[in-house]
Image: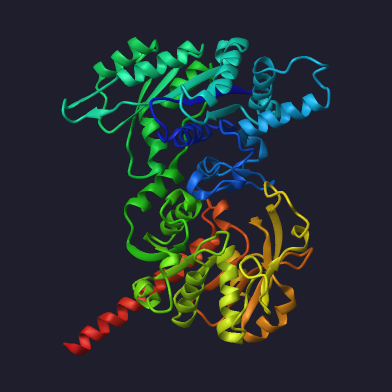
Length: 548
């Protein structure tokens, strides 16, 4: 039987419940336990698929085609195991399920209420993964902050489970903030006391309190928090700010968080933590031997969470290549033919990011052109690949109006077109080409060299595709379709042969990169960028020598 850990948050949002949950899961996994994490979000959207990136950050996609919260990306990157549809549930999905059941008459005419019908559905989904028999521990992160009106049904569901389960089968971890007042030069525990009191008023009593803080907690302060929050002093955990999210598991290990949890859940016979790979990763992360500057060309660069998985993939690939990846954000709306060289000339590599809509598209096309003509390593993802196709069609083949029908329905050269399966779709939510699909790679291509395989599987999230009516034209002109879907012929990968690195992919490789398995496309892109940087420095050094 699985045991359950619930992670709540108090005082303020954005404290990092997802990172704490993922760190605890990593520690438990390192001791030989089978662990999974799920996220319950209080908003009424059925999923984040229709949310603007400025509202919610990136939309993380699982193998089974679920559009989910970006925290699931952290779960996968830390645990190195895939998540699924069941790992992310919203209030919208809960209510949708209950209302559908009511319409079908499943409640036999009873009045449908928040308690018990909504809370019963929440509990059912909270226990779902644990009932599969695949996991020893299921960690459930509750989105939002204790006291939010929309979070109340989730807190009530946890209260009921705490009451229904044996004491050793259920644990509540509360993440809170200990603010530091500069004027008084001291840490203040009162917000945490109020947060725990508010949670207790709802009938949920935390077993462990994790305190986000900018300064170390003294033992006296920990005892004070324990006394007023009704937990043991060793159950008050310090969570100091870290320079990298990947340091947090080791910080939690030092604090003994995993041992406290194991004891409270009565789990015996566990092995010592095996974190050698993790420690090796951190050692390389903190001691890079070089640096590369990578331009991230996007339309949501003001919010870093919009490209969270890409940024984390850069970190993974940088460690493999023993270099620090310095990401230079370049807003695609600010690029034009007149300033593109000035904006990109200092870069060692260029990634054109995914996105939707026409805003900033021309800037992306100019950036691709600059990379292609100047042998600057280029990597295009989803829309980034489509921009590469459009740029090649315009400036190499000569179709000046080449475009995507997403932006220009009247173009005479629709090199990117709406997928046939999407033409009858009216509803926007959950209807894109989503999830993992197979891709057959052409032997002898750069993609084949990168992957070391002729068959791969990658995750998708798009409606438009490469228009195969123009396939021969592009192939003859030198843009090679090196990867295709073996069933429908959808072009998945394009590349230019005689270029240091010019690869565009229709899928989202960033969604599968983890600490233990960095994605090969990112690793190869950073390797090419590092080589470009070294050659550039060599030329500069030679020029100085000649001048001297």
